[in-house]
Image (cartoon, each protein chain N blue to C red):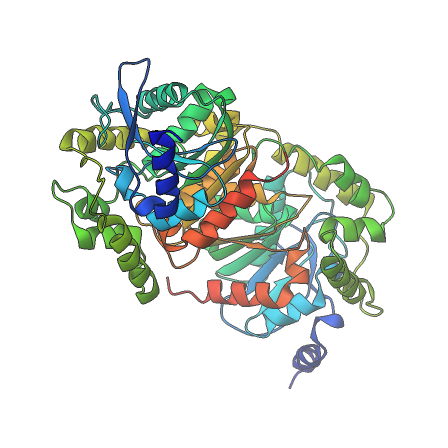
Length: 293
Length: 293
């Protein structure tokens, strides 16, 4: 057994609470930071939310996903421990993600994109459809939908400041109910309680570039809604019923525009519905990814 | 107590299983056939499905709705016992429905449109928004959505023939599961078991004109999807998860395009989800109509 194999086995025992960060050099000259957990045929590659790095995935969700498949979260260009500068368009982020997938020598993957990561997932499906098998779009919206030009003022105040704001995180990722807030405290404990093998923090450059991309994505343009009609991959669209960052109506819209989408709205939850309802969401993802074509 | 009051009281006791058909003359020269049940401020006016007349509303649903409000199903122009010729566009049907509402001297109404009736409801909301308070869109779709140019071949075979096809009705209005088919048998018993005070049957002229309107509504035109963005009334969009006549994806799309929509998809049910789940659907309609603005 090689040193790498030993580490992988140790990771599988520890779960996502304490995995090593791995690195791979891509053809674009970028060294990507990633983690991997679980085993299986088509890897499930994860695309992270606004300002998030590898550590911002709830270990409870990753462990639930990794119980049945190979799961690969990574930092896109300029994010966390990945080198380079974060680009300011979703399209460039998609090309950067494709470069990572190619560097990993994955022939075909399933994608799970969360928030801005779900915009990147849509773009990958449009640019390089053959690379994908199925796509999960969590807290998503199609480019050009009206009313989503940037996050709402209270949302960007809560999660857009230079320094992290723990209460702001809870306000955006969890619903204003005691059940959701309690789930939020637990998720935040798992996410921010990590003490070893931490990823590098995301920078202000990443925040600004990502927010430029978010605002550009939200420039209202009804004609652009038609783009996702070209995504004929099976898609699973999911959202929290009280998400203040990307309203559920955009999940309805996306699921209605996509030719082959399933839609689930999780009750009493917000942007972090997939952390709050990690067990049910992971079960729904597994069921979707295992559907017979 | 006048003769009319006595009749109304008798109707309330009997429920929708055996109500009188009433008639009102409108300014457009049409004599409209309608029924009414229940009491309350804003009447809930019902717009019926393809080829349906007053008798095709499940009495169980009407009774559940009338328990808390005034409910007014009517035959639009040329349908059942209403005089005139059925027009072949949704827009003309909307003007005809407005003429009925004016003839009834209703200042403002709630609308529940079902199937083609939901297309008419959208059009009324666009033509005469001030006439409406809130709108329920059951088994609906926005004009211009792709993939709905006419009913699917198996659907039009089942419900589009000159003679009624009881099995075809069950196949389209109920899901292919034992629970849904059993509910369908019960609903069909309530709907078709009526022996007195029957409405006039709908004609082939109505069928052809309505189907022309349905096909025109489904001519794919992405730009037309933007029309419903002008409906800023509160809307409740509802569908069965297995509706073969108007797929749930069009409810997603509609709810995503409407500025102020709630969406509920009812499990294990098809086009007749509102008959199968009459109790829950009526409760959801009451809750929606009683929301504080």
